[in-house]
Image (cartoon, rainbow, N blue to C red; front, side, top):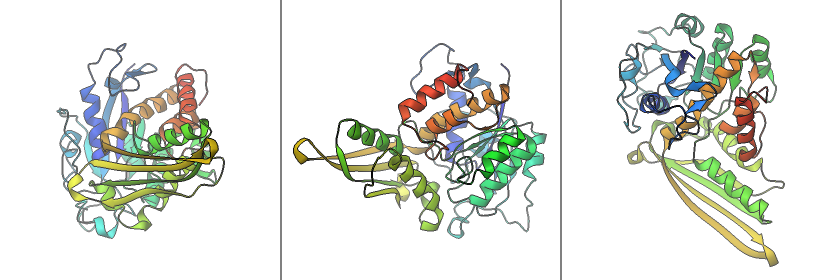
Length: 361
């Protein structure tokens, strides 16, 4: 079907994983079921159709390098599972805005704005002929996310919002309308993992409800050692993240339940490993107590890359079909804070119907 040209804002661990993944699975036969992938081909698009055309960064160690080199620069610490050949795609200095918290300037090797000028994002997207932009900026980057969203609108580029800045799920509907009016598709907000804390928590809650158990209280505590967790050490950086993760679970509950969900601590030596502790207590037949306690340990960044790889291709299909505005099916399946929250099994059915052309969006 030809190239699917993708750019990235924020070339961190998630970007490293997804770029490695397109090489790792490039030669998988179209019809084969492959461990690690939900779709080898998403509609007519194979992973090998994705071409990385550029990235925007504030890290002076990454700026000016080819993506194939920049994704392995510090502070990236996700596992290296595939060699990446020269991609012929550059890393450009992106606007800093609110993307770098004061405590992260050193960790991110942030460039000096007195020495380096950021590029015009919309102009650069046009120059590199991007079709899709993934937003992988740090959590808490509200103004920066809006700048990249507007640049996509100005440049005619589809937008995949991987972080909890509420753009696609904007409660005022301002951003969804902007994308719809511009004839551009978007999907978001805040990417789910293939098997992460949020989807596991949602599954446990749905199971308890379906089996007639009254849930009395629940929590989800997460620790990790990558820069995502370091960035979220301060509560003002993770307000939207806590809302996103909490609403992903409480949206399934038909009544109020004491709930605590969100990033809990930064443990340096864990690097890209994430450890989640889940707890739920309820009552079943005869008012008897049941308690679930679970521990999940994953490599954080490949976990989300496995989902974003489908989002990219869904947006391309939407472009092919002249669909604009939020992709409801893909957003509900792949993101924690979509415009419409529905159970995951139902969202999966919506996605398959979208692929087959039985759903508009």
